[in-house]
Length: 482
Image (cartoon, rainbow, N blue to C red):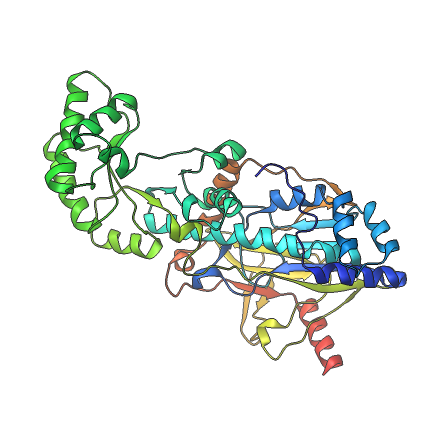
């Protein structure tokens, strides 16, 4: 997990295309590529942007070392002059991106790369790998935290993640999405986020009896005393022994600042309600009842509906792997090529599937808010030269069904551009916030969503509309190619 050379973390065809452009030097035009996704994960109403800091690190360190050149030469498909070019390769273009923690929607550029085509082509795979993974986990975490309705959610998935990188960067993304801590100590060290955890069943089993195990743990960690109560019998043994230890702590004058039990098996709704009554009757109404055991947003939502007395949730496998939706589906498509006059010529990809037809040209995104509530009305994708004034009326329409139109009166809405410049002529001009600051920003972003958009099942759709000029450009290209 220390610094890695990720230059060769690319698909072979990126390099073979690069060589093709190199051999036809006149073909190394300045181009625009858009990275975007087509459908929200988990059939939800939104996604959360994450992974930009790692994209920045990748671009900054993008260079071919001697061993990389030697390996590529051994493949027998790259010419000596192209390999010599790679020795001095550096990214020289511009990059724009939606900042981490931002709510985002399908078909709008998450990242826009403006660079010579050889450079823009090379970075495709790594950008998608990084953004797809972390945005997926951040989105899943936001859904889980929404289901928890203000309770703390801890990320506990490292041992079930698909390798060290997925476990550590996934935990980072989960923190951005709203988790209050992670069990992953390396993530805590790298990204300065809270690390949390209790103990395993093996701790209990290694002692002569459950009470002694609890007592020993409480002596070691009196200010973070969460006892795993289901090793033997939750209600007949675990909870009574925990109450005994808490009583002794109180009688000894030890402050009970953060204490309680954890349930990791059985009927969590039934057991938590019974345990709550036992703890309350013993004089411990502020004792935490936390739960783990294959949780996800749907199970947490169900347990809430059943009146479960759980106020802290440890979510592992289903979060770190986004088990029900294990891939994000981001793509990277050519949007424009600069012509001899210096202007960008829009390009479009056709498909028999309407949603796979791309949006052409050099674009930017405005987020449109209802002024009265501060909630998102829509996102508007337009060409970079277009300008809008909030005092003017604004007409929005669905690009898939353009007869569906909404007119916003001037003064009733606000606009915010959401793409930020990250690299300018190969130099980074953006400073990534700390993860916990991104998390706080993400919570504010989620507050701009309507409740109907955040619901877990059949959420209301936030429209991503095209400006009239961009829509007309798209239709004209479709006519030319039909």
